[in-house]
Structure formats: C-alpha cells, structure tokens
Amino acid sequence: MSQRQKASKDTNTQPPGVMSVDVIVVGAGFAGLYMLHRLRGIGLKAIVLERGLGVGGTWYWNRYPGARCDVESLQYSYQFSDELQQDWIWTERYAAQPELLSYANHVAERFDLFRDIRFGLTVTSATFDETLTCWSIETSEGFSFQARYCIMATGCLSMINRPEIKGVERFGGELLHTGDWPHGDVSFRGKRVGIIGTGSSAIQSIPIIARSANHLTVFQRTPNYVVPAHNAPLAPDVQAAVKADYPALRARAKTRRNGIDFPAPTTSAMAVTEAEREAVFENRWALGGLSFMTAFDDLLVDKRANDSLANFIRRKIRAAVENPETADRLCPDSIVGCKRLCVDIGYYETFNRTNVDLVDLRDQPIDTVTDDGIIVGCKHIPLDMLILATGFDAMTGALNRIAIRGRSGETLKSKWTNGPKTYLGLAIADFPNLFVITGPGSPSVLTNMLPTIEQHVDWITDCLRYLDEQEIAQIEATAEAEATWVDHVNAVAGGLLYPQCNSWYLGANIPGKPRVFMPYPGFPPYVETCAKVARHGYEGFALTPNASV
Ligand code: N01
Image 1 (spheres, rainbow, N blue to C red):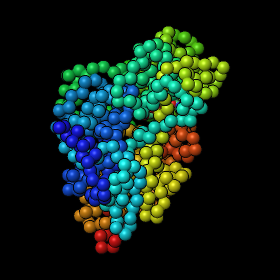
Image 2 (image 1 turned 30 degrees about the vertical axis):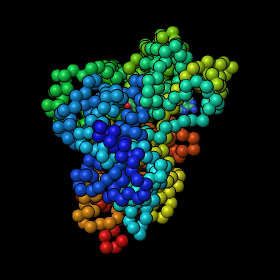
Image 3 (image 1 turned 60 degrees about the vertical axis):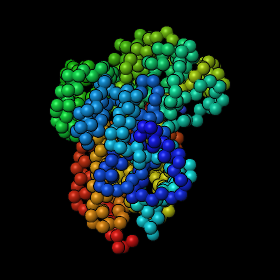
Image 4 (image 1 turned 45 degrees about the vertical axis):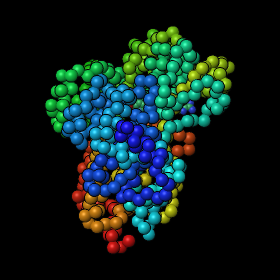
C-alpha cells in the first residue's frame, strides 16, 4: 500500500472524538505541505486537514485541459531542499497540471508527509478558547481537533465562483467548472461546447477544447490581455545550467518585484523613444510569459506607459486574428496587468478556426440558460456541454467560508465585512495563535507563489520556535499594528494603476464583495519588513507569557 493510499485509509478509520495536537494546518497544497515539514523540524506535532482526496491544492482541483503554470517550472518550485531541486526533472518550460501534481505527490512522499495529512475533511469552524489557549476545529464530516496553533494554508484561489446565471440549474447537458474539474476523462469529441469566461483558465483551455469539439462558443464579457508563453520542452542542457547555479537564480528572483527572475527593467517607458519602446516590447514578446510587465519600471504606475503596452498587444491581436470584427472584440480597452496578465498557447489563433465562435456579452448579456443551450438576445445557441471558467472568490473566499471565531467570539467573516484586515497578511488582531499563509495584505498572488509560500512558512516556523523558547503562550497582532499595515497596503496599491479597473484582486468579480485591493504590491521590501518585525521581538504583536494564561 502506498503512503498516499494509507493516508486516505487512515482518514476513513480515524475514530471520532477530539484529537489534540500542537498545530492544525488547513490545506495540503504547496503551503500546507511545506508547513508540515517545517513544523516537524521544530518538534511540533501537526496534522494537516485537506478537503480533497490528495495533495496539491490548486493543482489537485484545476484539472481542466491545458491547465499549466504561468511561471516557469524551474522557478515555480520549492527551494528549501537543494537535493529536491536538483533531483526533480521538469519536462517543459512551463509545467502542466499533471506534472505539478506529480511534483506535489513526490514532495509529500519524499518528506514522509502523508502520514500526518487527513484527506476528505472539510473544515467548517475554528474557535479560539482563551481559557485553554487553544483552537477547536470541526469538520463537516464530524471530526474534531484541538491545537494550540491554527495555520490557514487554504490558498488564494481555491474557492470557486459559480455566478448566478439565470436558468443554469436547468441545463441538461454536462455542466463543468474549470476550478472543480472532474477527475476522470472528459471528452469534447462531437460535442457543441460553450465556455463562459475569458480569464486565464478559459484562455488555456479554449485552444485545446476547440481541437476536438464539434463546435465551441466562447461567451466573453470582458476581453483580457494575453501574451505568448512560448512553452517548449525543457532542454536538458538548459535545465542542467540552471541547476548548476540555482542559488544565483533564486537570489536574483528575490530582488525582482514579482519574485521571478526576469530581466529587470532599466528605465521608464516614457523615457525612451517610441521606436525604442517598441523594440523592448518585441523583445519581451519573443521572451514570452509574465516578463512583459517588467519591460519598463512604470508600466503599472504611469497610464501613458501602460497605454503604449496596451497598443502594442492590441496590434498583436489584430495580426493574429483573421476576422477584423472578431479581433476588435478580443481587444481589451482596460489597463494591462490591472487584471492578472494571461499567458497563452495559441489562444488568439483559435478564433481563426471555423468551429469556434465568439459571443460578445457586452452587446447582449446572457438571457437564460435552457435545458439544451443558452439564449443571448433572440438567439438560442444549442450546447451539449457548458463550462464555467468564471474564476474564484479570491483571497478571502476560502477563509470566510470557515466560521473562524477569535478571542471576542466574532467571526473573521464579520470582522472582514468591509474588506480583509491583517497584519503583514500573516496574522489578525483578535485571532491569537492563528496564522494565514499568503493571506490578504501580503504580496502573495502578485509574486511567484512558491518562494512566497516558503517565506511565510519560514517566518511562521521561526515565530513558533521563538514563542517556545521564550515560553510565550499566546501571540496576537495588535489592532494598532494591523490598522497601520492596512493603511500602508492601501496607500501603496493606491499609488499604482491596479485599483483603476475591475479585477478579482479587488473582489470586483463577486457581487457584494467590498472593493479593496487585497494583495500587497510591496515585494521585495516586504521580506525585510517581516524579518525586521521578528528581529525586534515580534513588533506589532502582543505576546502573553505562559504563566499569564
Ligand atoms: O478566473 P478569472 P480564471 N457572466 O476571474 C467571467 C489564476 N490562474 O479562473 O472579467 C459572464 O480571471 C469573467 O468576466 P469579467 C490566475 O491568477 C492561473 O480564469 O468579470 N462572464 C472572466 O472573464 C488567474 O488570474 C493560471 O467580465 C462571467 C472569467 O469569467 C486566476 O487564477 C491558470 C460571469 C473569470 O476569469 C483566475 O483565473 C488559471 C458571468 N456571470 C488561473 N462571471 C496559470 O497559472 C464571471 N465571468 C496560467
């Protein structure tokens, strides 16, 4: 029996009753896995609770065709173990979902993590008991746990968004969501497929679905900027060269605004001539991927600089798409990078196929879904399969669906009614001994997630070790430190172009969600800020010694 099977079996046979450990970690994605490894290293007994039946988080759920990371595999990988980063062989420049899932499983087996992960358990509540200084955690399956610390490794894009679309429950064909894709094979052959949404998930899956579907209709509400990935098999000599000098690459990445080792910008777009600008954009287009946003240092600051990039991409769209009307409809008119830039493999070219149609919902919105299609205006579009590529309730969604009650008994969801409030994106006032990995208020989704996860996990580990050494029972962000941090995050975001369009960064994709820019655009200085807080004896936190509780 493999470790993985054994872990699942243990989940099913675990007796009911309260299990007491030092730490409960919620989520077995890349954050939860590394957290468990580090907690063991400092001698703490930890259990990871995972609602899926396997590890991998994002890469466990997002199995849609074409799912692939938009950060290069040699960078979107753990660096805590040099043996791991040397041994693991990546096959492509950008790893596809199955390879990333294999990697997550490899890490879990290699570091013997499965035995402390309970799969198939959905955490419904976490309640802090101040008298006992402990968290009580309940799952919907009826399991109860108690722990001194609770660490949320619940992910930034893990709560899917199923928008209210009239009649969708009546649809009689196959209804799928990219973020909750079936584990078995899904065939598009001979089918009339419809996909709602044109974000990264749709942009990755559309070219693949179009290849085998009888017909594909893309329902677009807002066009997105898409740049080429230029994915390719990873040549062994390229991989070997990176691995021979991995520390240098990792060190360079830590100095970049998004934590990815791209060529750093040397000037502002407005400081060069139009011809020079064009040459730099062409160069980045040839390089591929998210490096676009770092072509110049003012692309997310100066609207004129951003406009020049937007014009460049629109010209590329018009060159790729044969039908000028379709090309026009695919051209966004918003700020580039305001929504996360999409990275594609043949997206725009897919609209040159005769079996693909674009329906622009800005002309007429979806009227209703019927049992066999979608009505837009007075047109009924017959469908056998409908795919919702409608994204996520990002950053706060996974946390808010758990009834997390802090010292005062107020839930986190209630505290965050007007938007998330954290200290450093790691801790929350009134919620002692609770940590969030890559929470709102931290750079998280604006950076390369793997190193960012490692930075948070390392910080939390050092903090717990300090608390143990100093015989401190309770740590809690102060309300003042939290308020100052929230103001700072808002001020930094407000100085950039990000808040000027609607995006999931702002919660604008979820009706009723407060409009607050959730991630912190402050990497890399953020890392030093966190380190300084620790060096100064956890400045901004209230620490309660053992004897006092
Ligand atoms: O979701 P999205 P996603 N009627 O929110 C549309 C990461 N990711 O899953 O823009 C009609 O971007 C919505 O339209 P609009 C990455 O960080 C990474 O694609 O709101 N349409 C939009 O077009 C990414 O940013 C990778 O007008 C509706 C789409 O659905 C994030 O996940 C791959 C609608 C949702 O786009 C989310 O990407 C995939 C409605 N009622 C994802 N409701 C890589 O690593 C929503 N839409 C490459």
